[in-house]
Image (tube, rainbow, N blue to C red; front, side, top):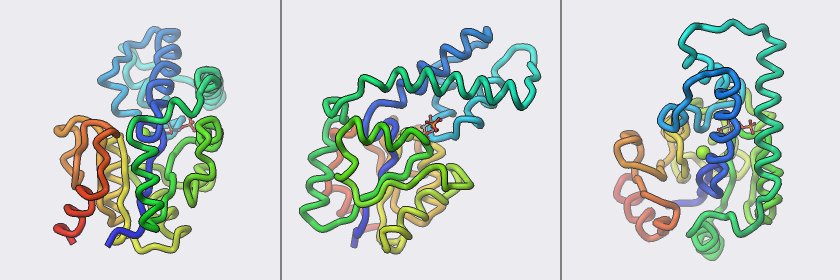
Length: 221
Ligand code: G6P
Ligand code: MG
């Protein structure tokens, strides 16, 4: 049986994946690096510094930055990101999310947020969702980021639920890998062909449907 559902934040609860993209795009433009939306898919779920490294790997001629310069670039991206998310309100919760979490609550199923973002608490606060989930994992305490399972395993541990009774919801390839590595049922949001490892792929959050997920969960276990 499903005892907990653990959600990614950016791109699942709200469309901050777009804000991350826009902030990285501004940095790439500044550095004259070609940075496409398609390539940005690789950055989803990936930590700030690793995202910067991926972005820099797109330079035509390899550029060398000192650690300090790397820190400054990452910091500048974060400041841009933070200015973009200042205007977030509860109306930015993605369609279907409130209904789905309400259904989970009615059924006594626990909920958590497992995000790699150090801005997760701010975003959750702006969405008015801080108290709507049992646990929000603190990204600052996670050593190994997605695709490592640590953030999902930590969420399950904090909820006191075995991974085999957990469902993870993600919009990133690295995130789905993390869910599967944690031994959980994986629901991906996005294009089917992008998530070969997922147990269920939904084209949008408005498709989140407890009965459908439970049916597949039971069939798979
Ligand atoms: C999430 C997002 C990534 C972001 C990461 C770190 O996983 O999907 O795009 O790079 O969090 O976010 P932060 O807010 O700490 O830079
Ligand atoms: Mg995401």
